[in-house]
Length: 297
Length: 297
Image (tube, rainbow over all chains, first blue to last red):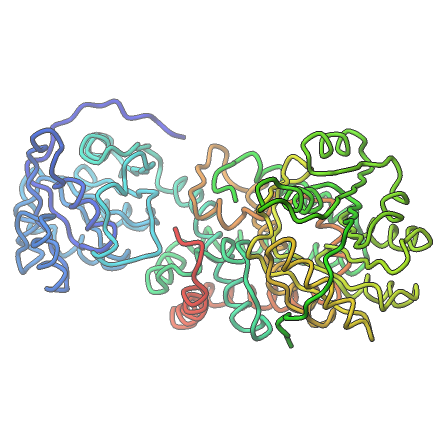
């Protein structure tokens, strides 16, 4: 299911970024940060639909050049990273193909991979494209939320196209070499099934509880760390998550139906006072949660 | 709904604790901690059903005396605090009444209050009992998890019996004076409705997701801070939470039915691809979550 990346590839001379939000901006910041032993020699060019964001990124030294058109970024980049929201990435991929520098590679950073991998195959760039998904999200957004250390030590899934193994290995190498991340090459369908469970369903659950509390908590209620932690993801960007949930709904919907059935089982155990069933259910969740560790209070 | 506590009361000379776990143990540790300007002059006697826990608490200076029988603690205490699990507290309350020191007060620390307040009224000690609920939980348990600062600045709900206002004020004063907590006097039924929403439902939701991930996450899945935070409460003590959920099921069940219906609405929006409905739902939860703040990542 996973393969560690040990392939050694050539470092791109020019990195192109389409989108300069928290993810795109963090890539630019880390590649261009001073004090990395004389620099890594990579030029970064980036574009955002917001001119103010382009200007801010250039002014803060995260970009070497910030052209006014996305096509100019595509023309210059040896590696082009699509770091816009998922549906914008799909549109940019199609629009920018005619402008790509010969021999260049393309990836994206969206958290759903089947759609964009299939799109790249249909557009005939299977050997130049692989999807990427850094597990380094933040619920903050925009270039202001960009950090020079967001990817250090973070798992980055890289999902190849059919017959696109070489491109995937080069892109995985870039994440490791330039961003100190830990790339894991994974099939796009397996990726989407896994993140449905580990990321997308937790987002739905956090928003479900947040929406409930927004509407039903008695006025003046005090929320402790428990309610705050359980709903932390609910603060994530609604427009972005609308796209993610819809793009991966084939994986998310069956999971939500399992959760709905499980909730019904808990309700029935409460109704009839079945302490044994409740306890076994709580125990199974507790054993799992204690095993995964992390984020202790 | 709430009243701040400004009543000045006499400090108990002897504090009695039934239960020396994370909550009872933390009360003992804080009252007996050295370096509080010459000490607060309160003697602490405590009992636990586990002799090793009694011995440990005495050995670490959290108790002045650790008699072998709970009735000996009741006989000595000016203020008796029941800090066992909720159903054990109900049983202890009935068992210890014949042994209480004349003129003493009694409280408990459980997170459901209607049942024990009604029990105290039926047992004829309405003017000597008020419930307490410190919002200072931990998912760790046992005396080893006890901390000398658990209650400092924490909200503690104090729920009076009918005609038990004076006892409630004295008990509230104890939390403020001896434990530096922030007592809030609240009707038991209002309390239980509020914590159903703010604490018990988040516990069910965290366990629901934990149980789902335990059974359905693909083998080898990586869980980021999002899944870890959303399920943190799932690590809480199953036996304790079985009691709490059953004791407050009249408040929790209607809430779970609202959540089940809400989950169904989200599923239908995903099925038909209704981006507007999904976005509005995510936005409502996000606005609420950003407003409550705290626990940022």
